[in-house]
Image (tube, rainbow, N blue to C red; front, side):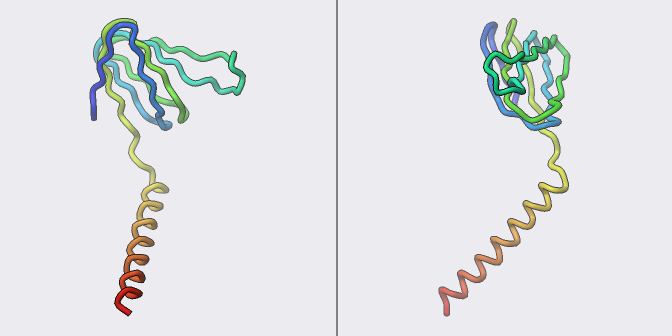
Length: 108
């Protein structure tokens, strides 16, 4: 995990997946989620977090974090679900099989 530090009026943009948590240990920030509409003038929700607060992402998307005063925060990603673990295991198995076939073709 990595602690990010921002000075007053600095901003930080990142893409987070659903279930990610932002823990604010020092300072005050405003969180701006990307609009849910294609309209450039769409309402953009803003959430103010104060020292000691935690924010949990309700959906995956882009986020802008704006420091109101010097702050430190930590972003914690969710544990991978069973589906992503299964896909990762299938990919590893397929790559091993491909490596075996390639090796046999070279030797043959």
